[in-house]
Amino acid sequence: VERPGSQALDRAVARILIIDDDPNASRRLASIVAELGHEPSIAGSWTDALRSFDPVRTDIVLMDAVMPNVDGFKLTRILRARAASYVPILFVTGLEDASAKELGASVGADDFLNKPVEPAQLELRLKAMLRIRRMTMDLEARSSELARLANYDELTGLRNRRNLDDNIQVELQRARRYRRPMSVLMLDVDHFKRVNDTHGHAAGDEVLTFLGGLLARITRAGDLSYRYGGEEFVVVAPETTTELACNLAERIRASFERESAGMSVGRQTASMGVAGTDLWRHQILPTTIFYAADVALYRAKEDGRNRVCAYEPAKETEDLLDECED
Ligand code: GH3
Ligand code: MG
Ligand code: MG
Image (cartoon, rainbow, N blue to C red; front, side):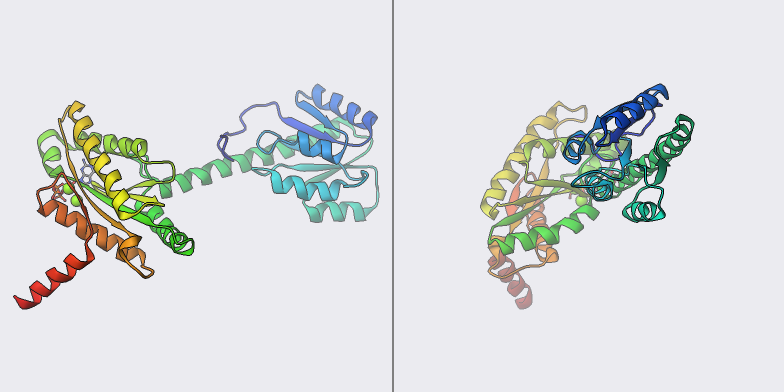
């Protein structure tokens, strides 16, 4: 799938859509466009225009202001709403009156040309429009790259903690609204410090990358995997009870243990804590479910690592009471 801004306009040839209900006018315009070295296509009606307008690939639109049914003013609004990135729209108008230009400018026309179109005039305008198109595509590419950097972890390619913080509230609310279960799995690599100390930081990074790939592969399409920080990972599993999430966690744990044996640093293990919304009868906060998964993870570590533990609310209460008695 082509994302908006995922491709910079580095070609000299622009794809130009000519919209005009007069076939003679559009043919004439198309031949000038072709002579200037660009790639014209023609739409003779507004329905035709909607069909021919490519939200990603159309670079510039040459729009006839006056057409039956849906005129250039309305069509400009429709095309702008469909375009994945900013497409300059140049009005070609036989009307000399200022009101057509005013209206055109207010709906977002970038410039105007009078009919019949002078090739030299068109060339100048196209150069300017193409510059706008290039600049906005550049900016769009840069801002989508910034969004990627802000939400994804460089090393593993998984989503990062910031993205998790943004998503978890929405997931919890959705689960509550539709009365569906939802679980959080928290994973921490066992004795990871040893990997770094024995084999070096780069080898440690390799383990993290490997684990990131494994999580992306094993989890279902609806599950989202995150690098929570350091050697800690989180999987958010919608539509999943604590019990089912434990099965998923166990699959991840077993695969990591088995498949990591093929790495140069040798077999690695991880411990996991699981908490699902079904453990509570009331609405819970993101901090509550993370706290619970973390408590369960801590227990998995204490019980000997390389294992999965689910949060047990009753057990935590008992432990607290024990502490009070001590
Ligand atoms: P435990 O089984 O109790 O989890 O032991 P551990 O050694 O995994 O736990 P600890 O939290 O003491 O150590 C985590 C280590 O992870 C320490 C830190 O140097 C390392 N680490 C954190 N982020 C990265 C990273 O991005 N790359 C590498 N190579 N190491 C990292
Ligand atoms: Mg840790
Ligand atoms: Mg660890």
